[in-house]
Amino acid sequence: MAESVSRPEVEDLLYREAALLDEWRLEEWLELLTEDAAYYVPPNDHPKGDHHNTLFILADDIVRIRERVKRLMSPDCHAEYPHSRTRRLIGNVRIIGTDGDLVTVAANFICHRYRRYERIREYTGAYRYVLKREGTKLRIRERRVFIDAYELGSLGSLSFIL
Image (cartoon, rainbow, N blue to C red; front, top):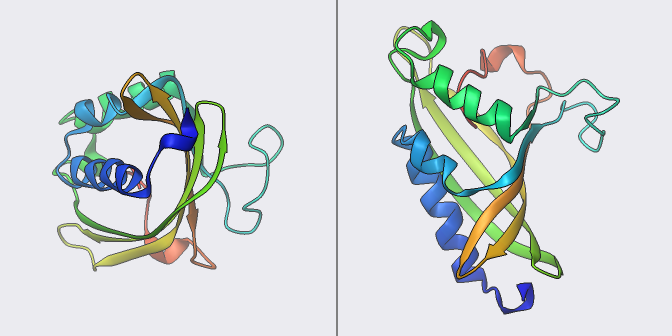
């Protein structure tokens, strides 16, 4: 099944995801995820680590992802209220593997973040996705974000979905 997935179809999903995140349409973004989705941001000094025995920046299952979205959309979330303005650029999208109804995808990204009273921040790195075919749609089963920066302190808090 996954063998029938095309790069343009994958690109459409990644571009849609980027637009939803940039527009803070997080409830719609949740609809792109499977019921067993996971979102990981490994540490930049151990990017191939396992979240079970390595301290990750983020290691969320679907329950935690939904709770994160709920908090981020609340006006009581001072870390992101008013919301940061972000603009993501996605490139070098590649299908790197298939296994049954699963497709592994790699892409590069740049995310510019604008926040009141702060300097502009730029996050660069790579995405790795495991996508799952559900009917006629591709959904995100796993999302990994590898940040290129050597040290993360200068990037400020990671209080939004990268």
